[in-house]
Length: 137
Image (cartoon, rainbow, N blue to C red; front, top):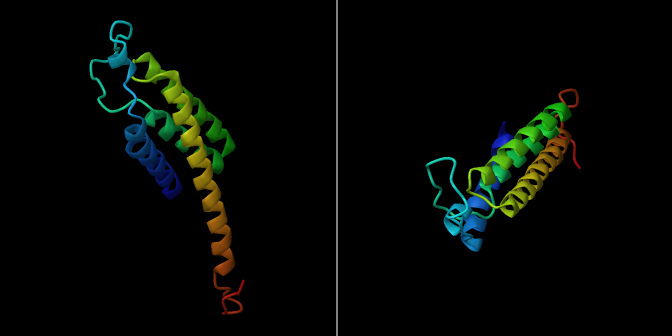
């Protein structure tokens, strides 16, 4: 769960607090009000690029994939469905989704990889109860 929380927190903060203010892309529902009709009445007022929904869901899918491949595929399918809903409701362009998904997948993969490396190192440093010494290395 810690790995999942770290991956989602990183994906969310990088997409929402760093990249959205940096690019400040206007959402399609505001840029093209004559074309885009919101399915939902609530309008998001933050920037459009990248999609935090896509980043967060793909980060989670990669973490689940690192735990269990089959569960990872299920979560990847869910991440795709979540991402496809965003242009449908008029709040994202397809490029917002693509970049958000790539960002989230990269962050999720990186956090899983880091967890694996740290876990491996942690096991090397644990005290061996038979020897009662800490292995060096």
